[in-house]
Image (cartoon, rainbow, N blue to C red; front, side, top):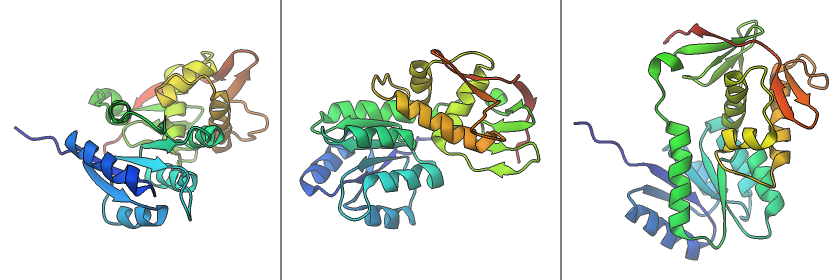
Length: 244
C-alpha cells in the first residue's frame, strides 16, 4: 500500500512570535512546514523545494506579501492563503483579485486555519475523473486543457494563465451561455462565500478578457449581463485531448 506524502506548507511571516508557534502547531497536525521571515527568504526556499500551499503574511518589510502572492500565483501556480490584519481590508481584496485562494484575519484560531488549508487543498488537488479530465474544452477555436491547466488560442499558441484565471474560465466552460452572478462565480473560483469582494470577480474577469478577447473593451466571449453577472457567449464542446 502506497503511503501518501505529507502536505508541505511554506509559512511566510516576519513576526517570529507568530510564525514559530504556528509552525509547531501545524507540524503537530501532520504538515511539513518550512518557515521564511521575508519574501526574499521565501523565494530562496522556492528555488530548492516546492510546497503544496503557501501561508503568506501581507505586511512585511522589503517585498510585501501582495507582490510575492502575484509571483506565486502567476509564475508558480501555487495555492495561497493570506494572513492579514484587521485593518488590511483593501489588501485582502487585492490579494483575492490577484489569485489568492483564501485569507484569515489575525488573530485567528489555528484550528480555523487548518480547516481553511484543508479546504483549499481539496479544491486544488481534487481527484477528478481521469477520462473526463482528458477531454479538452473547445470554444471559438480556443482550447482549455483541464488536466494540464493550459489554454491555447485558435492558432495553437499557448497563452499563460494563472490559477485563478483557469478556475474562472473553467467555471464559464462548465456553464456556457448561462448567466453566472458574482456570488456564484466567487464561490466557484475562491471556494468561499465572500460578501465584500464583488470587485475581485470583476477584476478577474477583466484580466481573463485581456487574454481571450480580440478587444477587451468590447468583449464578445465573456459578456456582462446588466444586473446579473457574466456569461460565456459561446458553445463549448469537449474533445479528446492528448496525454503528451
